[in-house]
Length: 413
Image (cartoon, rainbow, N blue to C red; front, side, top):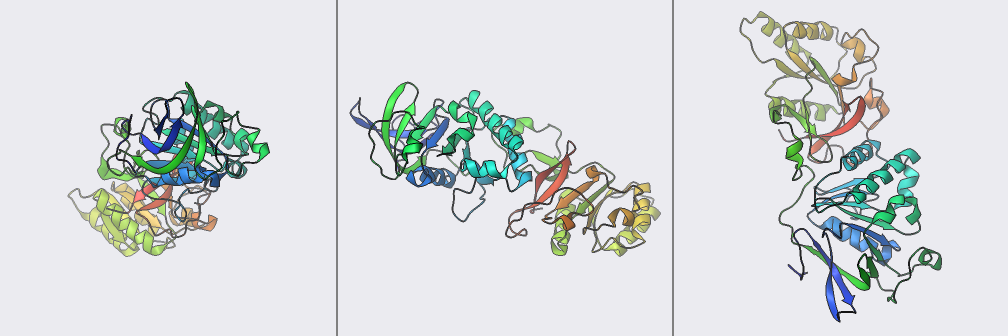
């Protein structure tokens, strides 16, 4: 792979070679310039598109992929986020991110397996995705993400496919019915990775995909802010009150200011670990078990001096008649309480809440993949993942603008 190539621009990608018949030369095939920030690939996956998507996802650049993972056996890395219709929380957050018109030239957005994606989504949600892609393509600039879409017979499912500035056509094993959807192309060998590029201002050119190369320096990760994310963070953000991050863009979610916060986590070991991590992060008092909570409340009530006003309390069960009056005592003496509790249909009763439901602004549900593990919340459960205890964050559902949304809570204190 070349470390540089003729006409290389900062942030551009070397993808292969193309046959410049008019100039009698073999020129670099590259993406990422202002004129080539959107690519539509047409052809069967094995003809070359699958190789391109896998190569893009293996570079140390941030990739947001709509469709199955391009890297076999890996749904997510520090640089790759895979979004399908099977995980509604991740899909809606990714869609919100697209609609915010992100300005990050180091980001690559991939869309493939369009027919499968369409079958998994409500028609209104699929249309919203199409509209968001169309808006990004219409207002593309040198600061915009690189958008790559791979289609075969499902090309007409997305209206936005007509807005891509560069098209690659891979003829290997393409049926006559598929070729009827394509423009007239010059002769091209039916080899893997061999195709024809069509772009405005240039005649069609035959190319061959090779190993990818980029001049990017460093490893871009999803769990760190993008180059312009700092501009969106309020100047007064105190990261000692950090709860977590939105899955896309790195925007912070801070500890809510409510007097009481209830964090529901079905796994007892994870619940205790999370309470200790967050107590350390927030500089709060940590209590494990109701006896510790009662002792702290009595000691604080009897103390003349003002002490710590935030308590992180982990409970094995909420079914104890002492809990409600102790929480009321803590409220009365001005101590904010974050309760880490297991799911329970009786939770509102155990906490002494008179209404039938808990204010969703006081509720956070962590790593709950079944409706019974969400009680008393009525939010949809999280999508199943192989090992919820793995990774460097917990998945949690919070209320944002009245809607349940996903955040990632870092496991590191």
